[in-house]
Image (tube, rainbow, N blue to C red; front, side, top):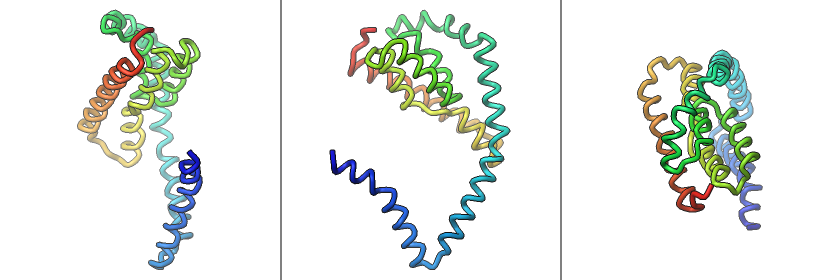
Length: 179
């Protein structure tokens, strides 16, 4: 365990040092390149803001309108018949849209059901097994001007579905489904 701690402590400084030494050997102006990268990062961050605000407004409207609750009532019985707790449905719906909202839901599920419950474990694994597909497409593709994102959306949502199914299967297999 001490070896892992030492590696994690020194890995980033070693990587940064290696980059600086390599840049110096190749006669690259490393400090100026760093400053230029920082400027570009700020420009990108500012260009992302409208897309980010749009996504946050859409998420808020989706939750406040009651559409999420309606969808839970609609899907809940079918999901429960497979032994999957319906409490997980909002997390699986929100996770591809917003990582922050999904993290809040995960925290609520863990606080309500406990970290060692099936729901708590499943929420934790789902949080790490899926991505914020709509967020990534909207914010990052929008910031660089990509207009046609249909294939990326299909692949991203397919990856999310696979992540959800595998997370449920692994948690059920490893920990059992006793709720």
